[in-house]
Each structure stands twice: as C-alpha cells, then as structure tokens.
Length: 79
Image 1 (cartoon, rainbow, N blue to C red):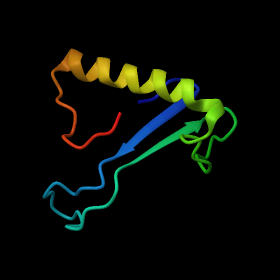
Image 2 (cartoon, rainbow, N blue to C red):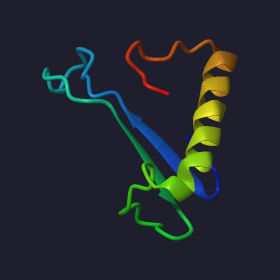
Image 3 (tube, rainbow, N blue to C red):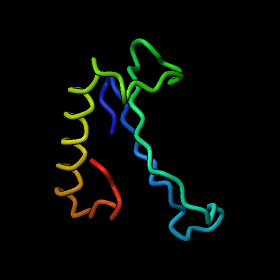
Image 4 (tube, rainbow, N blue to C red):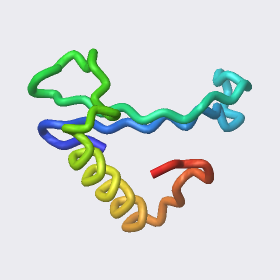
C-alpha cells in the first residue's frame, strides 16, 4: 500500500509454495516508511508510536481495496 508520502508493506513469512521461495515459514512482518524523510526506505517506522495512526489508516485502506477487488486477505494476516 503506497501513498505519495508513505509505503506500507506486509511480508507473509510464507513462500506459499511458489517456485524459488523458501519452504520455511517465518513470523509475518509489517514495514512502514515515510518516503519524504526516508526516500531510500532504510528505517521501518511501523512500531513507532508516532506513526501508529498512519499505519492504522493505511491498513484500513489496504483492506478496503482488497474488498473492492475481491481479494481475500492471507489467512494468517495480522491487521
């Protein structure tokens, strides 16, 4: 999920049987970047309290877009 300023990424932690993907499962992970302050995406802000509302809004928009196109969220997705 990306806006002009922010980028939200969800890593499933599961290769889901795709060719070239690792078979081992890992803990899913969220990343959030402020593209104005960090254009090279070096600092994950997802767990920073001052970005909690931004993360919440972007997750809600991601969910809305998934529903709009009929995309079922990954079974273990933690939103």
